[in-house]
Length: 260
Ligand SMILES: Nc1ncnc2c1ncn2[C@@H]1O[C@H](COP(=O)(O)OP(=O)(O)OP(=O)(O)O)[C@@H](O)[C@H]1O
Ligand SMILES: [Mg+2]
Image (cartoon, rainbow, N blue to C red):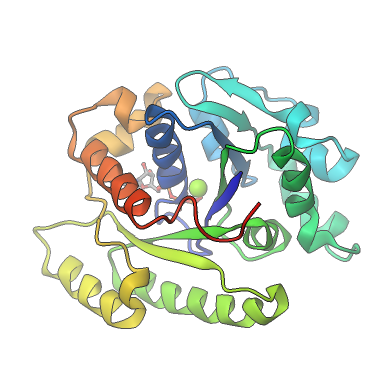
């Protein structure tokens, strides 16, 4: 099983959108996909029609009651499975932040799940702040996708993330494979290309060649409980996410990294 986190402490950069559409695109290629919503905002969960609203059915029950993840995952037709979130997740920091091994908690849960589903890709949608939940995702991740919206504040945020990862790596005792992904890219704006140039200079091959364009179908799809492929298969957004999966598959990103 591969464990991938979509991570950025900055809000609104396209984490949930990317986790959802990567998952949906990989499922369309025949992969067994599990999405984990690790955000108290529960945006990913809200995209699933009729998702459970009960806190006992959410990933909070994994933290609070030690419920194994396999008991919490639910089928998401067309995508695979989802472990839903709940607003109560906001309490994880204050309730468990000082507990032993808390940073490895999610990794332990996923290790148990790995014994059941070795061929899976687990995609974790992170929240926009750096606390126990986000660190759980980074500690559990074989690889990270860092969406960066194509503006200057997001560029600064990406530099902060690189700094955070460089501080964490000696603790983790491994390099966390990562790819920065430009989102909300607008080819009509000079700024988008300027940001791309600066990102390339900063991150080299860790920046994806593919960019995700600003695209209305991408933004509309969650409103009708769909990923972009199900909502508008011919849209620019669907093409971009398909190209991203091609690019990452071709360079072994999904299936290299820490071994099982
Ligand atoms: N490529 C795109 N084109 C148009 N709109 C987009 C695109 N990507 C994301 N959006 C829109 O931007 C907003 C923020 O996206 P999203 O929720 O994925 O970001 P996020 O990083 O998960 O946010 P948060 O930090 O709050 O979890 C949403 O309304 C989403 O529909
Ligand atoms: Mg989100």
